[in-house]
Image: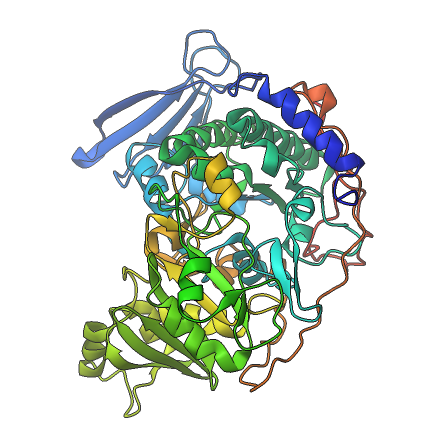
Length: 580
């Protein structure tokens, strides 16, 4: 116990008590003026929509956005540069963005496509083309999602609390969640960001949600302006707004909406100050169902009734390990690989379970209350053999694909055909996602995954008593899976995989080559090497809301040698947020 309650933990606890005494929405923030929206008729009877901004407070519009072709996307900026009440410059938004040297990339954690599409239809984020649906991994959680998006090193587990096969015990958890990975040794997705709020705020946000979330946006904004001045113009800037994940869990749809509107203010400030001479890409790593999901599945009692014991290690065939941390829409379990099938069969009848999936003979086997199926892969071709019922609701789709001649005699079809056929499905891109889940994504691959129904969650019982869970992610269903991808330089495909995102936004160098898949199909447990814990810094006291006391990030990582004319694929760690 003494090892856990160290100096950093005591400081974090003190910060929690301090923040708990403050109003949750307190704290100054920048404010960009709201627009006066208008509509009219342009040439050839085309409806014109516009947004006027008074950015200098003189009562006259000095920045105007116009949608001149009626497609809902801003086409033209008009700028009054000398504040004389008349516009001096007319700028083509898309042409300026496509020609811009600077590229700002922002990941906003846990933003579901449905909410961003709703905001866009209301006239928000119109500098961007309509949001595309980014298809997350299964489980639809941050660790595996970013490993796929960025091709970075795998994290040890699906969450920060995980089962270490080599040590045969559960490790990680709250303490690891409060410290920043060492920038000199970390090769996971954290190493990709130019800005990421210190992990200790992951706990503080549940005490003072809007204060911490607003601080996250302010710090990201300061970081952008500092790097925009200091960094060569052809190098991208990559910001990670992670606080929106907790806001979605704790405050639900309205809380997430609030933060997105504040993000829009930040983007308007940037686009106005640069006169659109910047390419901006937004994405999220997964979605959120915004369904009250506080019903914790009873893994212990259910498995006990089926002859299994939830334990902290695997010592005999009855043992199963379920690392439980955040409240998410999927459960992952470890066991003797020879007992994957009986464990999955038991979990298929768990109250709140949609289906269980496990690896057997190189295939992903799905078992649920609606039946069972097997997913096979041969290179870039997939097949789904339905054994009983229709657990993934694929029967009509398979028949339609057969009718179009897209399947061979063994039921295999190419990946592109499956991808198109599953657009809009309740389980998007489900064959590839489930097959990848049981073979890859993390160092310690679980033996059985359970996708839960909306309204249910798996995780720590402590957290279910601490917060009212207003939404979650993790399952294979569309609401929890589909994030966003959008940019101001042109439209993206309507559906896009995480692995294709960096190339689609014009930054293929930002994606590393992923490691080879983890070997599977062995009849006995094959220990997987887990990296030794990296040295971590002792957290400093949490800052107040004054910019002068902004948190100092980790020291910079060693700079890589880069051939002239090439962008560095990953940024060094920041030396500190800009103190504007």
